[in-house]
Image (cartoon, rainbow, N blue to C red; front, top):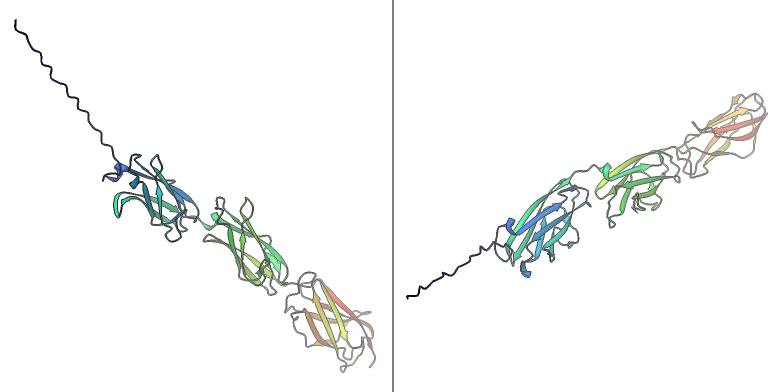
Length: 344
């Protein structure tokens, strides 16, 4: 009997090898790298940030795990001072590398590029656009004065308050105040003052010292390239009191030949009267209330608030007790000195 031999053809199993992409070989950018920004639009305020993320294959060779981030606008947090628009970040074990991009002060866009290189050769690169959106200065900084009208007495202080928007980084806490008139109590000789923000409400305060001249001061607060202003008007500092004195005898003959020097000194409880203040002199008879005599040589007050004039009774018919009154227009304060008019 003839034996039949059975031949079994060996089965060959062919497994399709799926393409596994990594940066160990050249490939299309979308195949090996994913680049994203969260958020994709931030405020152009100089401190808002967005996170730039790259994801690469976990299997990538250790030689190709350093991601070079560059930007055409803004700057990277933790970058070097020499090149704030470039930073190198190593991907972690999950294949992620992240960089923080800080917004510029001007509205516009930033083209952010992420690259992996082999020496000078770029193995893979990807770009993304980040928008820096415009913001009005008032949304970042506001300024107010506790009063907008102050006496020009060289001493009164007006509190100026600047408030900064929330979210300011700790390293950016300085507000620059400036004024076109007056000075700041923290630096009396300078029209500028740098003040640190205080408290959780991001407030900076400074005291504006009044000048001794009448005028308007534009007070500005500047923070991170944005500026806000308020106007403080300095009005004449009028006297709180007037002292009057006569040089020589208080007894005067009723003739044109009689001439006495009368001095008025204007003073304030705080500061000094504004130089150049107009002063009015008048003489009245005590019993009749009639005005008499004449004053000559009157000038506005000097830097010390003093004014001197020459008084002549003339050939008035008034006799006896009289009073010289001194006042400033627009002010209720009156200074007095008593004199006596006698026969020639």
